[in-house]
Amino acid sequence: MRTPLVKLALFVAVAAIAGAVPTGAQDAGLLQRRAQVCDDPTESMTLFAKRIGKRKFGYGLTPRSVSIPGPTIEMTEGECLQVTLVNDTNRRLSMHTHGVDYTVASDGTPLNSSCVRPGRSRTYVFQAHMPATRTDGTIDAGSAGYFHYHDHCLGTPHGTGGINKGLFGALVVRQPGDPQPARTCVLVMIKTTFNLKKAPNTPSCRSNLGDRVEFVVIGHGNLLHTFHLHGHRWSDNRTGMPAGAGDSTPIIDNKVVGPADSFGFQVIAGEHVGPGAWMYHCHVQDHSDAGMAGVFVVRTEQGLLTKQTVEALAAFEQEHGGQAHDGHTSRDS
Image (cartoon, rainbow, N blue to C red; front, top):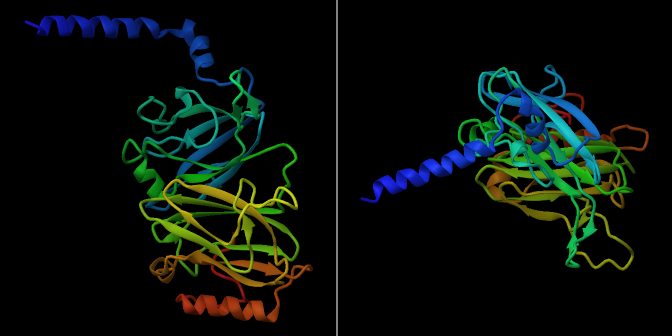
């Protein structure tokens, strides 16, 4: 006896929803406004998704520059970014971001029908808002931080296939006036790899003595890791730098990294310790033994490798089954 009432209720609910959704070309403007968190994006970019070889995928600023991880996207609080993702693969995929503002139309998930079909493109809009005080007196902290973006559609509704194949990258949101690094090194800890590579083919982040170097560390997959950097340390806060002489934030050189965790910090290359081959690795011993290690190469101020650095790089190659060649590891970053 209750079945007709249930059917009627469902019909009324569906009809109400359908009536609330605009259709037709005349409503395109309304749909576009609903898909944005800002009226006029201040920046725009195009991101391409393509296959890399037979088993991997990557994002790139051009079809020929796709990489794992994808390009680092930088924003400053107050900016609004429009990203057009071009899917040059034969699989459905997307771009889902952490840490910034977006509407459901830019969620990049099957849940909100914001995947990109093969051969198609889609525009996502993201805003990094400024700190503010809410009407109730509480503080909205703003968007600044070290975040990331990744696929959320390939393989499963959670993008597990896309992430495991390399569809991820860093998203850095700065506050106005934050120090700018000379270079940024992105290290994604996934399975027992960095950036889907094992030693000795992991990225060798290279800089000169005294350079300001930024590390962005991201976790993916199913494992817990710890990230450790030899010879350098940072404050366990938003930027990795003390806010002032009296800042009591802990100084660390090792941090736990779980799936989808992300953090970043800046160091002065070789400060107090000099040039050299400074290892970074997961401090879960089985993981580092499995090849989850790389090298932060600090050259002299003139950009030269010291004799000791050349020898250390050769040893790193040999210890991990590679072969030394001119003091370089197998992959620079």
